[in-house]
Length: 84
Image (cartoon, rainbow, N blue to C red; front, side, top):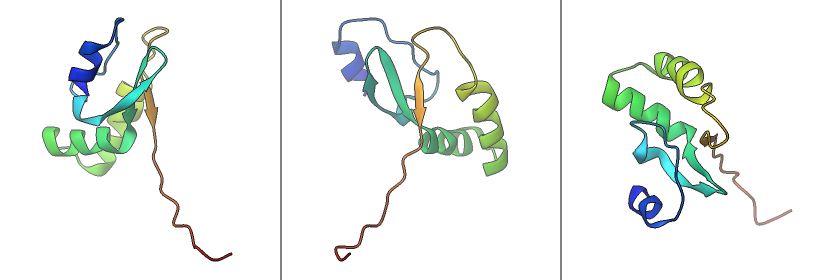
């Protein structure tokens, strides 16, 4: 994803250390998976689930750094029945 951003015109504001959680762009903003960000905090920084969620909520998702502040999304998958 980082390579893709480098090929696009414009300046991109990214969240340091979370390249593995990038899932796309929306307008002029980079979009990240919240779940992947939390997994990165757990695996690369040795945080527990609770610590990672608290850190992410306050220090990452809660940080407004201007109009191009990245977007963090929660992806949920619905199990749809073929029968109604």
